[in-house]
Length: 84
Image (cartoon, rainbow, N blue to C red):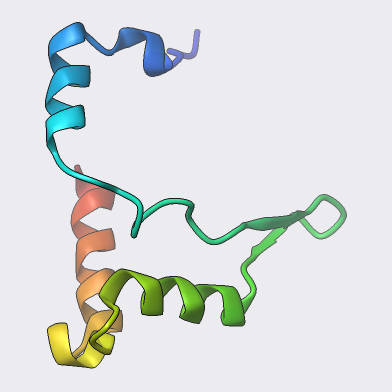
C-alpha cells in the first residue's frame, strides 16, 4: 500500500513560526509557471518566464555576478536533493 505524504497539515506551529522568521520570499515566489501537456505527458516552462524569474531573484545584479555557473550549481543541488 503506497504511503501518502501528509502535506502541509503536518507542519507544526514551530515549523510555521520558523518559516515566517526566515525573511521575505517576494523575490522567490511566485515560481515560473509549469505547463503540462496531458497528451504528450511533457512538462515545459517558458524560457522567457524563467529568465525573468532569475532576473528578479538576483536584481539588481546579474546571476553570473553572484554564482558564476548557476546552471551547474542548480544541477549539483538537484543531484543532492534526488539522493535525499
